[in-house]
Image (cartoon, rainbow, N blue to C red; front, side):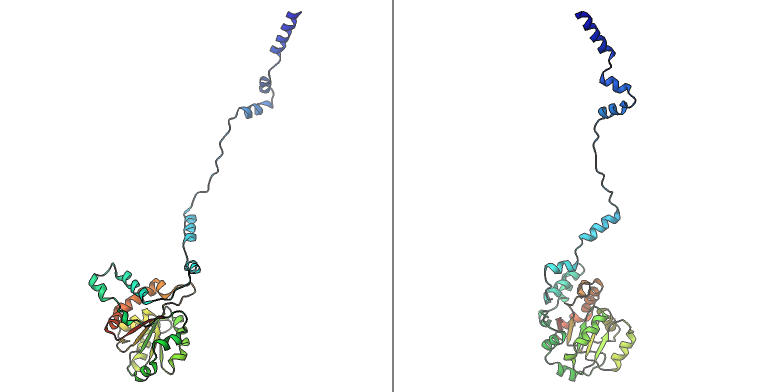
Length: 267
C-alpha cells in the first residue's frame, strides 16, 4: 500500500504541470512570463539640445546693463581725472610716449566740476562770474566765448532753455546737424556775433575743420559729462559721441588748453 501510494503521488507529480510550465501553455500567460524574465531597463532623462538662439538668449540675459550697475551704486560726478584716464586709454596703444605727453591736459585748465547739485545756469554762474564783461567785450565773428558740447540735438535744446537765467541778452547758436545745414551755420557765424555755441561734437568738429568756427576767442568749453539719456548712457558711454569728442579735443582744444587760453569744465 505504501509503495502504491508513493507511485501514485509520483505519477501525479509527473502528470501535473508545474506553475512555470502552465504559464507557458496558457494563451495569456506568455506576457506574464515575459514580464518576469525581462531585465530592468535604465531610464535616462533626455535634455533638449542647445540651439544657437538659446545660447544667445542666455548670453543676453547674463549681460549687465548700466541700469543694474547704477542700482547697486549711485552715479558719481565726473572729475578731471576721468577725462585724463579716458584720453590715456584712447591714445595709449596708438601714440608714442612723447605724443601722449603732448596730448595730456594740464590740471590748471580744468574748472570746478559739477557735483550733481547744480542746475546748468547755477553751474555757469559759478565757473564764470565775469560773464557780463566777456559778453560785452566779444565782437568777433566766426567765434563764440563759450562752447557747450553734448550728445544730441535734443539735449542741446534742453541746455539752451536751461541757461536762460545765466545768458541774459547774449546770442546763442545751435551747432548740431539735425534739421540745420552746415552752410547755414557757417553763414550765420560769418555774418553775426554769437556769444555761446551749443551742439554736438561731430558738427562742431566739421565747422572747425572747414574754418566756419574759430576757437581762438573761446574762453570756456563745457562738456555735458554727467547727463544720462533714456538708456542711462552718458555722452562718453556712446561710442560714436566718445570718438567724435576725443577727435575734437585732439584737433584744437587740447592745444588751446595747454596754451592757457581755454578753461575746460565738466557739467
